[in-house]
Amino acid sequence: MDTSEVKKLIEDFYNGETTLEEERLLYDYFKGDNIANELLDEQQIFLEMYNSEEVEVPKDLEMKLTNLIDDLASKEEKKKTSKKRNLFVWATSIAAGIAILIFAGIHFNNQQPSVQPTMANVSTEEQLKIEEAQKALLLLSSNFNKGVSQLSVVSTSIDKTNEVLSRTLDQ
Image 1 (cartoon, rainbow, N blue to C red):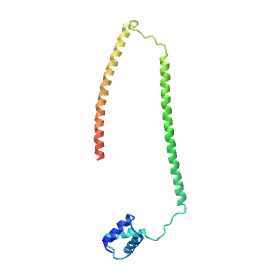
Image 2: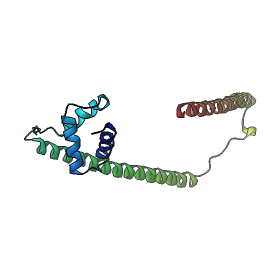
Image 3: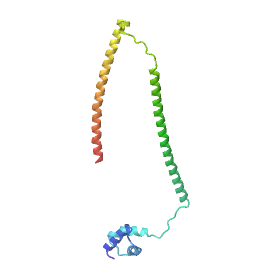
Image 4: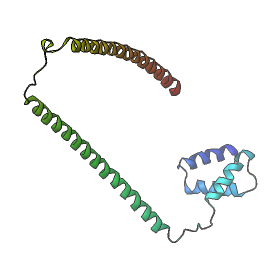
């Protein structure tokens, strides 16, 4: 048989398009001695597929496979149950948080307003302390706002870095 014919039959064989007669021709060819060097690997593969030795199957294989399938099925069921439970926990937590906010709002809304001290009732010394506290709070607020604006710049830089990394890793 010509090497090109054998290659065509091998291709048809791997595609599942050969007849029993064509497979018999391939088998006879590979059992023979006149095999092209480029087809020696195919010979080994083909003859191994038609090796008549029985493969020993362990007696407890079916039981092991059944147990494995059952274990996988139970793990899958646990995952589904766990997802449902997590959803329930989240929904309950959100509802409880909303209820607490509603009750806190009602409670603080119904309280009597307390008497606020006026500047007329405060001594000069206390007024100076209040003014110093206000200055300190303004300074703190100013510095905090500067820090927040710096965070915005850093956040923009991080976003740009992430974009570059994403593009680099995608390539």
